[in-house]
Length: 272
Image 1 (cartoon, rainbow, N blue to C red):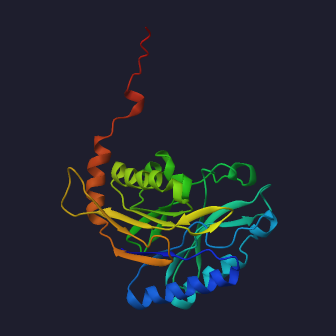
Image 2: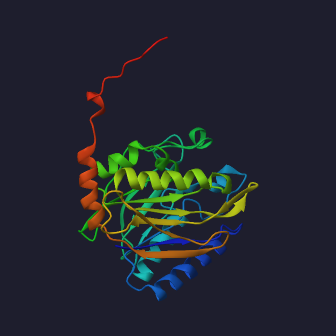
Image 3: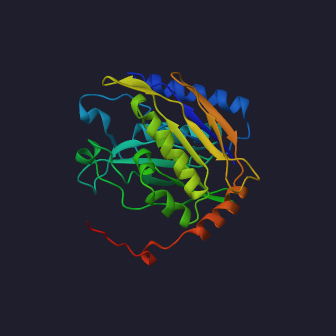
């Protein structure tokens, strides 16, 4: 699978954000014409102190911007995370859309684990979806905090996901923990992880990008060895890699076969 992350800078002007994403996508595809799918970060548009300005209507302007990019450049795209209001929900929701190369919406994944302030402002997702890619492989989308819990990645791979995409918004002081989470999820599930992080500054918070494509060196079963391609740090840009999904599938089968059912493990409390 040929995958890429686009890591644009978050500007105060939304149109400027749109223009930079398109410019980076064009540059990416000029250098890597056979890219299968592109992932955007969780946050790639401005953040306003007025919360109403941050929320789009369902399938609003951000949605159509990414949809049109997919169609115009003939490329599958994951939209990152869009904050949108849906009539059937009391609160807005954080969602990532998957568009095919014709600009058609294939599906969307809502953020399941809401982080900190998000729990007050948004509705959590309740369904994990598995998407097919080119009728060859399946993938799941885990938005940022969804990768901090082992249950969601494990549930994805137990239901056939061959790769995990994660649009993220990790600020500078959380990068060390984030990198550990990504490596742990890749190793414990023997699954490639593509994590696209935000770059920019707002509300006195700094986001440095440094997106990652984590896969495996072929042939190393025990110990399995990670292959990591990293994006630019403290600048906009993109990363591309061609990852092998057949080898991780082989070692994932071994790893899942080694798992012990937790319901068969007795827990005994020893008191002094």
